[in-house]
Length: 78
Image (cartoon, rainbow, N blue to C red; front, side):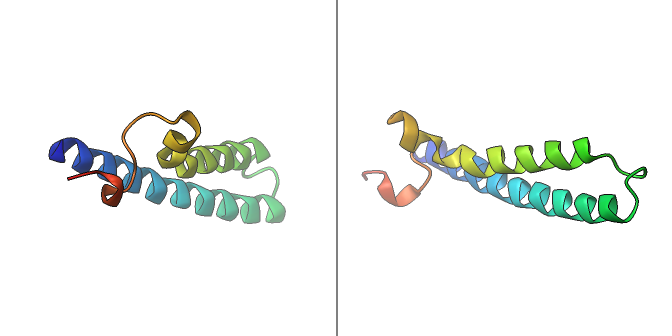
């Protein structure tokens, strides 16, 4: 079970990092949109924002389902 836990932690941490980067990208695009609406469309901002929220919530979906491999390695019995 150790390799599965390592892979689960890697995917969880990676999705959080990419999610935060997407939220930051959405903020930067929104700032560009406020300066010049024709240069970057608002749809890009919305897509990046939704993607960031989904990726940040991805590691915690096991709490909603009650099944699956927990995100933290401290919850796994040894």
